[in-house]
Image 1 (cartoon, helix red, strand yellow):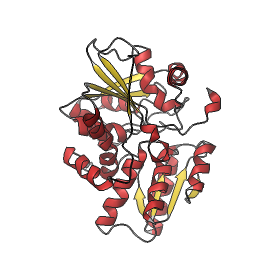
Image 2 (cartoon, helix red, strand yellow; image 1 turned 90 degrees about the vertical axis):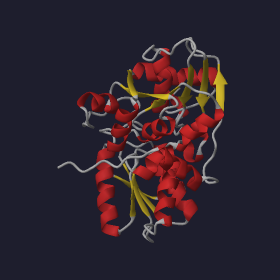
Image 3 (cartoon, rainbow, N blue to C red; image 1 turned 120 degrees about the vertical axis):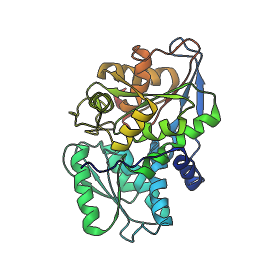
Image 4 (tube, rainbow, N blue to C red; image 1 turned 45 degrees about the horizontal axis):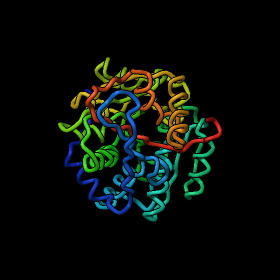
Length: 314
């Protein structure tokens, strides 16, 4: 019998917003000339968040909720990450005065590994994919009693990421939000926050179609991981919470090619002097390629969710 999937709802996101207030940044919303015909268009500059990605939101919510409920042990936290989630958990743990140990794939970019160590985290490199690092981190948490921190498939993590959606609602009237999908924690949180108010389009590389395959199969399924965005969108399967939320809120999956992602990343630099990760650029690629075509009066926000990258590749 399959274990029941935990669900999140808007009150969970609102509780997360109250819990992490003062610990995360309210990130800017930049209105731009529409990249394609549309009513209005904005970039949500979430890469300006602590540690360079949206992940700090969920990390703080998970750790603070555990502390409030007496579940935060002296052993601290253990996380697995392709880089960004690890940075967020390391930062949040340091701010809350608890130790952090982060398991990363051997393919994790050096810039992220160096930053993890600078934040005081113990870094363990293992395997070539996120799933292998996640398995090792689960065992470590079980052995040490540390709080296990999943990069994208825990209720408090997803609800924390959803606080970005509440900010968007407060900053502008928006019909549609485009964001990149890996394991789906950001998508799950934002779609929950916006449920009944705006639609969410989940953009992912053709080489890592976790959302598209899950929606087609009716459940999360394993996919092969490759391509230019594998360091940040390298989950081998969509999270159970993300799938449940996507099904409930009718999130639309959209696929883009690696070439389109590379070109979109360069465009973001050329037009706005913003350097983002390849995974982040996927959301812009969906508009540039026509994979997603907004209506002429549609108000669209594009989440620039992470910038922990080497700019020399532009």
